[in-house]
Length: 350
Image (cartoon, rainbow, N blue to C red; front, side, top):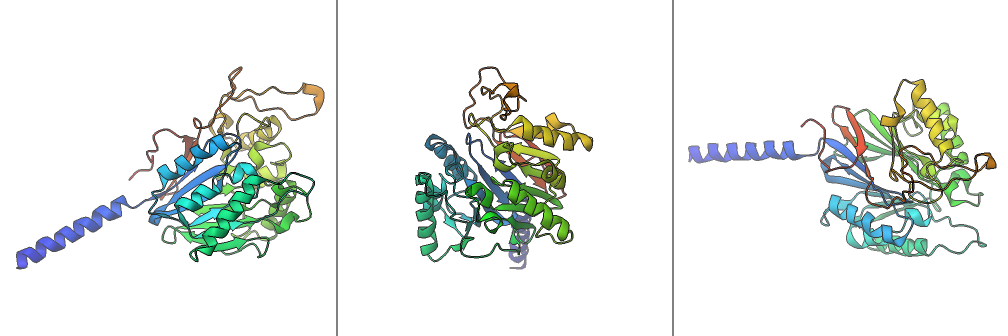
């Protein structure tokens, strides 16, 4: 009997040891290449998941976003937080299949749409109904900034090791006609590292974030300096202002873009290049784009119109979705890895 008890205790200890080894000791962010859109999948310790935006520019890109989410998250898992930065099509097309297939515990969003003289966005109508249905289930918390204030307390995941701070959104520019200006921005902190998910934030939002960061320098709910930034508005020239870039001061920059709108623009990329070089960081190894190789026709140099950044360009290339996703790995010891996605194997030392 005593021998059996000892064997049972040893077996239990071994099981606990294996479980501890198998438990995630990192945060993994995948910026999915959905073409001209945005979808970020976040895997955290403790079996927690977050999605920041769930869109693509065209319906044909939606299936790939959903496929990537299904690959990363088994359907018996919950999604702890879904952040929808704003209502534009390229950020919401996968919301309905996401809500259909998973239990989403909390949805942070607003419902500001473009003015009445602009055709209504059908994709948002579908997403809004999916959100309503998810909330009606009684298991999903609806944080709709059209009706409530931006939360200032962090969402906590990963057995307390991960904090997600809402930094900006909705009330910043309610009077402006562009939903981009109402974008929700969140910052993820883990092991002393940070990732800033900037949605399609524009000048008004950037200036709001800078002012708060300077006014409350010791309050993590307002801090925007981060190791990695998912650049605002896909690298548009009317976002990513130099003072915003300097305040965030990222070591890594990721542009989620595709073959449309000439994103990321040379103007925006040059601002990050200047900041990185000023700190002795090599831009080509610290800047990533999900449309690598893309070649769009630029306007004449003297036209005053924005031009596509030509880094990595392949003449005549029309970049398609699905081949240039970017992975961010943050290890429990604070080491960070950013690179184009390959086999998904974690580079953190186990």
